[in-house]
Image (cartoon, rainbow, N blue to C red):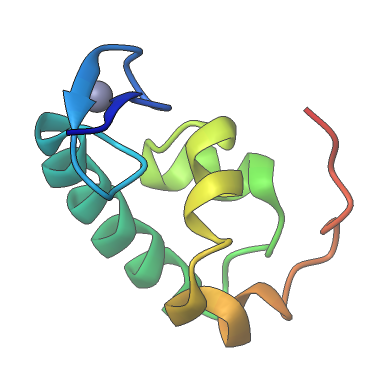
Amino acid sequence: MNFKTCIRCGCFFSSNDSVCPNCKTKDEIDKTSLKQCLANSEIPKNYESLSYLSGVSVKNINRILEAKEFSSLKDSFNDIDINL
Ligand SMILES: [Zn+2]
């Protein structure tokens, strides 16, 4: 069994995911919020505005947008080169 450190909360867990089961649920909620925000064309597409409007931290936005399902949405960002 492989133990990993959750990249979201730092706890130890065993799974093939990069986040623990608790945070996986939170990630799903964040993904839903982000999708809703990204679908709204009135919203400026940068990480800070998105973080403010979705309640998802910039750190988590940065990570979540790496997911394949967001690859097309990510193209609409103004400041994609944000460094944390
Ligand atoms: Zn976690």
